[in-house]
Image: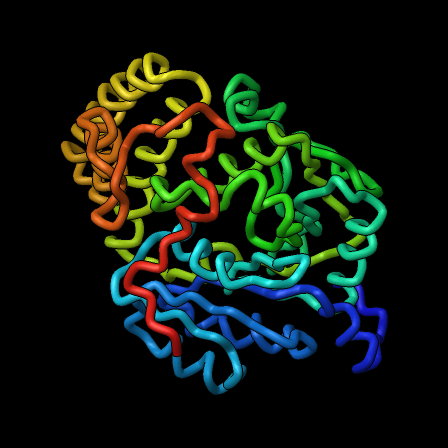
Length: 334
C-alpha cells in the first residue's frame, strides 16, 4: 500500500469527518490489524454478529474506546451495518470489512477524490490480495455481468486514475452519508450477499456516482472475517442462492426470478444428487445449500428468522429501504 509517511497530525486530519463502521462475526484472527490501522479515527463503530470466539476481547484490547453494538443473534451483514450507519453523524462513513487493512494515506487519497467529485456517493480503493495481486473489486451492474462471458468479465483492465463504474465492492468504501440518506441504507430483507449490488444500483438510480480510485490501495484477505467450515459454507451458498433470486425479482421482475429459481432447483438438485452418488460430500452439500436457498425464496420464506419478507416491497429506488428500516434489534451498546 502507498506509504506517504504521514505525521500524526496529518493522519488525524485524514480521518476528520470520517467514521469507520465494521461488522464482525468470529473475526478475532483479523480484527486487530484492521483496528490498528484506524489509530487516527476519533470514533470507531463495531457491530458484532453473535461472535463465539474472542472477537470482542480483541476489539477492546486494540481499541478500548470503540463503540460496540453486540447482537445476540446474527443479523447478517446489511442489517448489522445499518445499525452502525444509523449512529453515524459525520459527513463520511468508511465501510470496511474486518479482514481489510487500510492506512491514512489511502484515506486521504479517497477524501481528495470525493472533494473533486461532489456527486460521488462511494469512492473505493484498489483491493490487493495477500499475495499482492489485484482483486477485481469493480464491475458492470450485476444483471449486465450475467450476460457477459466469463472471459470478458475476467479481462477487466485496471484504470490508471479515478473512473466511474456501476459496481464497487463493499469491502473498503468511503461513502457520503448524504447519498445514503437519500437512497436508503442496506435493504433489510437481505441477510447476506447482493446487498452491495443492490445499494450500488439504488445510488446510481438517485443520480449519484460510484468511483474507483486505483491510486489508493487497501489489503483484503477475503473470507478471513468469518472463518471456514461446513456450517459457514452452507450459509454462504444458501444465501447466495436466496439473495440472487431476491435481486432478480427486484430489478428484473418476479416472473424472471421465478423462472431463474426453477432453473436453479433443477440444476442444483441434479448436481447434488450426482455428487452424492460419487461420495463428493463437499460439492453435494454446496449444491444442496443452493437448492434449499432457491426453494425457500420460491416458497416465499424470508432469508432468515431475523428478516421479515422475501419479496421487494416496492420497485428499485423506492422508500422501503429508507434509514428508518435500519433496525437496532438485539443490539446491546458496549
